[in-house]
Length: 281
Image 1: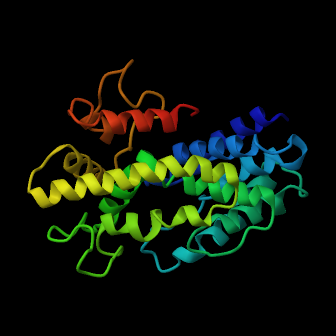
Image 2: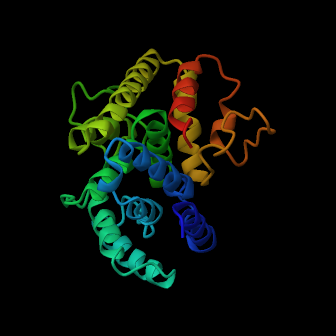
Image 3: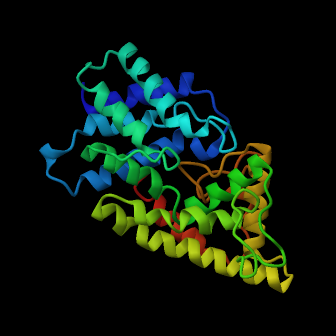
């Protein structure tokens, strides 16, 4: 079968069997990771990267998705690799391909801290981490904070100038303790190039939100933070995958968090960034 045929098979399996209400790790995340991976792979000689391994690993890298506060969280990539092997066997994938897929899945996790050894594993790790940067990354982080019931920020010291950073308590601290340092772990030059401007978006969001917090005003970025935090608590989708800005559809605020923000002034830079991040998806 062609890669397009396999993609349809993997999409169908996920739609039928993937049981998860976490919109930060849903099928749309899998699609974004797959596309990131293929963009990175396009910078390598065609014969040097196994595109099937990349595709399969992207669609099943989080097939066992444990919450960030789960006691076995660090085992999630191992459990996903094991389950992916069984799924791919059932789908008729060649036994020669499965170990490569499993290695890529096993090593993609930030918390697992296992070094990728193959080019496919390095590309997948970068592709997954890139989805933690930029506007998408910020929205996912806010959403996860809502799911976990953590605070968004320390109101008196949002940037932790006079206190230790605590990403187990404050979502804004998570941007500093994990998202900001993650680019250093990227393995591919093209992945680093993609990440660099997206990390600047995260920094801009962090700094502007901190100014709003300290000013005591509930302005546009406070509304972004509140909206996606509440979306995590209510288990909404982040945004409509095909039409995030409701250009050809009616807004549905009950389903999509982004739809709450589309009429708010001062967010054009975030919308432009999001459009750029999603332009290939």
